[in-house]
Image 1 (cartoon, rainbow, N blue to C red):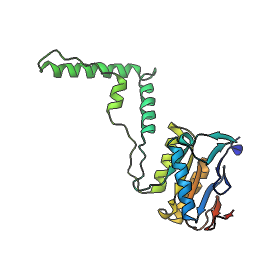
Image 2: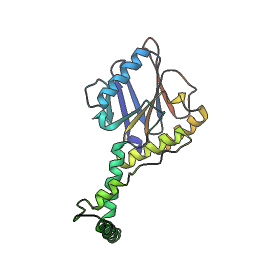
Image 3: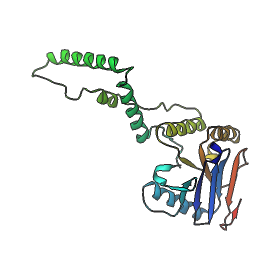
Length: 228
């Protein structure tokens, strides 16, 4: 069952293993600036597909960080419309358009569009044809995207995590200094939602904030000593 699922992030720089399990939201306080910088550099290079020392695993199986981890270091703006997600939405829409339920309507629309364009082209010089009038191309052309108007950053991040799970895969999400942007009260609600939905979240901060229910906290102090 769900209880057995855990992700581990091993940070050899300080000999620390962070275990993200169900029912918990992990946080890592790094008080040593240089170490925080090194950790972020390592993760970033692996996200680009390059080498690094940090190891991510799921149920003891090593995962490719570039495919299984997302790092949020920018919250203004925080973009929902990542290319990989949009492409997956387009893909699914294209499949839906051709399924049994929609096939007839799809074809009717294409015929309608084609005859409309032919009507327009009659008024132009030359024999004009439309070589790319396929349903796939129409879906690509309409500029599909997720609505970005949110009042709450926490809500937006939760929705983004849901989109990643739905359209991409299960990932570990790492936020950098998120608590600078969200009040403690809202943070409590946010962490509760994260835990309820079973997302794997590690909040990396450079200083301590009040501890939250369900938070499993790891601290690396200024002298690089680990306090769990």
